[in-house]
Amino acid sequence: MSKCGRKKYMRTNVRHMTMETVESQQDRSVTHSVAEHSSAHMQTGQISVPTLAQVSVAGSGTGRGSPAVTLVQLPSGQTVQVQGVIQTPHPSVIQSPQIQTVQVATIAETDDSAESEVIDSHKRREILSRRPSYRKILNELSSDVPGIPKIEEEKSEEEGTPPNIATMAVPTSIYQTSTGQYIAIAQGGAIQISNPGSDGVQGLQALTMTNSGAPPPGATIVQYAAQSADGTQQFFVPGSQVVVQAATGDMPTYQIRAPTTALPQGVVMAASPGSLHSPQQLAEEATRKRELRLMKNREAAKECRRRKKEYVKCLESRVAVLEVQNKKLIEELETLKDICSPKTD
DNA sequence: AGATCCTATCGTCAGGCTGC
DNA sequence: GCAGCCTGACGATAGGATCT
Image (cartoon, rainbow, N blue to C red):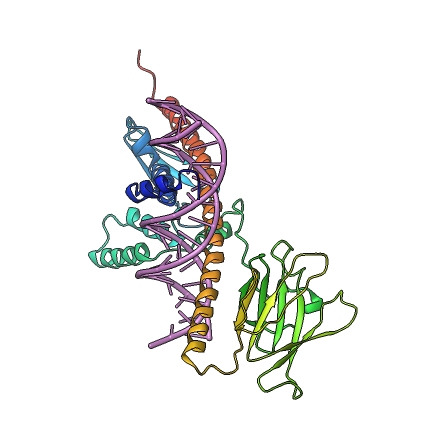
């Protein structure tokens, strides 16, 4: 809580313009500007050079990579074919290629039948209602435009797993200690402990759980198989629950405790996937699931924000490029105008 | 110095989308 | 149909800047 936390709390309730909102509004403003630039680009002659009678764009959007050819109809009635400065037509950043196709079709089909118009509007509605993923949009763009970097696909756990632990089972339960360490309990009973500071799974250590007949019923032997350990350590786990504590220090230590004991800081309790009978256990399982879901969502939100930032950066650079291109086109048209229209004395 | 504003970041929820 | 993912929206918090 900050020194003026209470005050801020009261204020934020009144002020609905939170930063996320501002951010999204900024996004929208960027989007708008790009859209304007994009449409201006498509109709440069009509918008930016009002003195020019008519400019029709031919061939734009019909094929990628083909140079944009502009038919400029001069006031004298003469039509001049101009190859634009843009050698490769860029799709709009904020719209998927499909949307651009629709737009181009709209431009080209001014006297088309009403049937295609209906299909078009349907398509448009469909596209507009769909919420695209930042990664998808950017990757679509990057496949069209070489200059745009791809947002990396998230590496799956298998991909990110180094060879020495490639045989690890897929975790079914993930817990985070108060020290930030992640503990994953796999279906096969393997426990993975990873330090958040470590890159990927570098800090991963394996605990293999094996059942033994010697301990009381319901107990589980946890076989500690840390790579740096001298030998294998065994932990006796009473009951059907596992408590693991990750202590700080040179050597990681783990405490397995009974669920009824008071838990020190940094201890996570995990229900064994084996038997869930009592309502209490069911409630614990529900809580565990919720915690897992929240953790995943937390990570997803972080990733989403990162992608969004990347996307906005991409949009901004695209705006800059389009502005330059627009300027060049205007200059080009002005030059053509000067060449083709004789000066009056 | 304290109050207020501004900006950035985070966690959570809800709802759409998608793959199975 | 459903589980999981993605993302907009909202509220909370922190910290720096500015105002009184």
